[in-house]
Length: 142
Image (cartoon, rainbow, N blue to C red; front, side, top):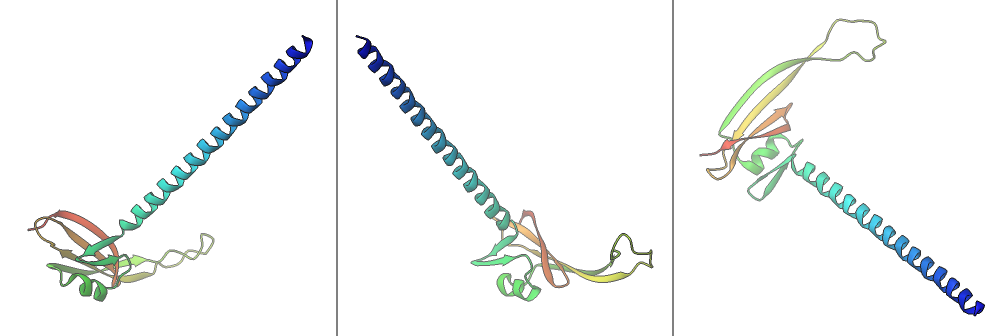
């Protein structure tokens, strides 16, 4: 009889250990799954952020940094254009440099408005020195 109780104790311990191993494996799987989901979400958000800096003109994509010539080639002529020059100061080379006279650089700014029709938003393209630097959505077109 003592032998049976020892067998029971051993099999009871083994079952408990087996259950602990299964629980640990389940926990590991759950953690890996959560890490995978998190990585997927971060990837989707990064992709989404990149798409915010591009606009589709017909079947062509216009991205930040495109030249004015590229935008005209892909989207055609805008319905409105505005151009002016801003003067911007150059920051000092370091905070330890002696104070100096402020230097101003001229920066050519252009804003173009595109009207893609009544079912799409109009878009305002902002160029600095001939390069696309911002795209803003306006109201619906006409």
